[in-house]
Amino acid sequence: MRRMMTALACLALVAGSWSMAPAQDAEYSAAEEGPMFSQLIEFEVSPAHAAGFEMAMEKIVEAAKLADLSSDYGWMFFRNGSNFTLVYPVENMAYFDDEDQWMRQFSGTPGEETLTEAFAMFDELDYSSSSSITKYNAAHSYMPANPIENPNNVMVFANWVKPGKQEAHAENTAALMQIISDVQWRYAVHAWDGVIGDGGLRLYVVPIDDMTTFYGDGSLQAALAQHEKAEEWEALQGKRMKLVRAMDSQDHAAVPSMTYMPEGN
Image (cartoon, rainbow, N blue to C red; front, side, top):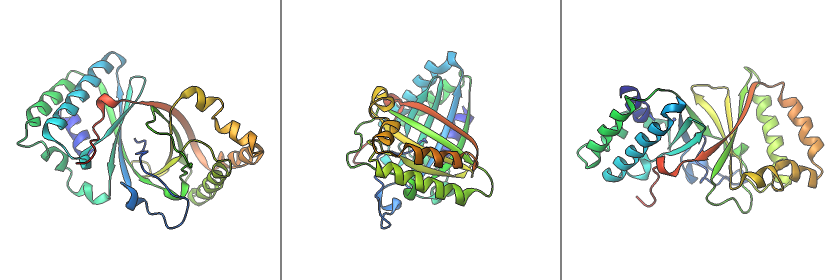
């Protein structure tokens, strides 16, 4: 129970809060539009215990509703197989000066007992967790004119930048984002930079509606070909490979039943 309490009390989405709307000019301030940081907790769950993990988190959602937790303490959950990612938006790093404040929101409320019951459920589960904190990077993000509403999935593209290559990687990213803007890709791209946990981590989160469209007519490759930008894109990607020590991409499904993000409170 203690490791789950620590993970949730300190709270990890990672993959990012996609409701934020990055503008395309220098006047944009991420802090004015929404949380500037996200804490990400990645849970690797034994496949046999995935259903139990989901039930336990749903119990925590129930506790949050009973406690009438405000959206300031809300979170989102995503799933990839039996692995889960919790995304906890935070406005600034000062939040982490008081790591117990999330737990205190339940104290003396109808949700306190339910939260204790939920933690007890985790004692029976086989899982591990890791945490990191990322900062929103508006300059390396992109928002189309008509962004996808109510996305069901996110594609997460991860780069681990080589030491000493941060500036070159940033320049390369800016050039790639300019191409995405030029071809007017239908999908938004939200960039997050690792600040605690892995300073070389760079995440690019793309909320999507339909996988068939994402890989088909709405794919980036299709947009690049239509605007004759494919060759320029590939040249930049070739240079990018020399700037990173690793790359990865995964699709994650949103899990509404494990998510608590109330509106208007």
